[in-house]
View 1 (tube, one colour):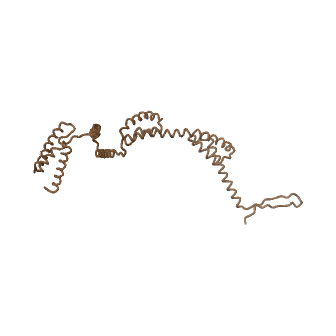
View 2 (cartoon, helix red, strand yellow; view 1 turned 45 degrees about the vertical axis):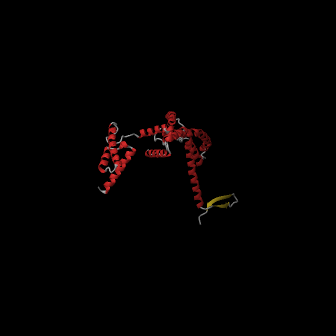
View 3 (cartoon, one colour; view 1 turned 45 degrees about the horizontal axis):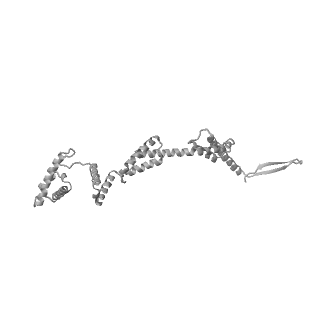
Length: 293
């Protein structure tokens, strides 16, 4: 037997001995065959071990054949839920047997379960009843669009604590979306009456200035902003549009006047020529532009 085969055989024997101690019914007929072929009973103890392996393999096979969920020569497929329920029943029956080591091992198992589900927070099943009651209250409010932010936040907190997470696209998610939309709507409703009053006051100030064509760009812009916030839009052809048109026209005229002033300044100052009538008549003043030097 090569060194590699020797290592494999030793490893297999160790595995079989572990099964013998921890879970005897998991020993298969294949385990018994390999032990019988590769190991010799050198003393009474080794003989008893080999005999026990062979006996348990046959017994396990008989047991597994009576269980439809098992395959011949394999350990029964016990569900994790059944194991957890058995553990719960054992703790309920004998809570005094719980030790620090058992608790630490159980907590380690819970952590592994959470990681397998992609969760990082420990669930609290004892909150499930409270969560379901809250869901029953929130469901109709979500459908009517009347759920508040406080109610949605409470549901989110309960689900996160009960399950260790919140379900994407679930009732909690929908409730938060509806509550946020409702908050925005209420905020707009509360502010619009005040904006409407302010808009009417500003319109009363701007109206005569539009008629006199004296409204400024700043005044027209403020009126536009107020109407857009109060109504969500500005009326085409309304006072705001007229104010902006007049203000823009004044801006253009102001720019043109400034340009003319600049051009006139380039021609130089105007000189006055005084001419006296030779017959003693009145004086006449003739303005004359001086030529550039």
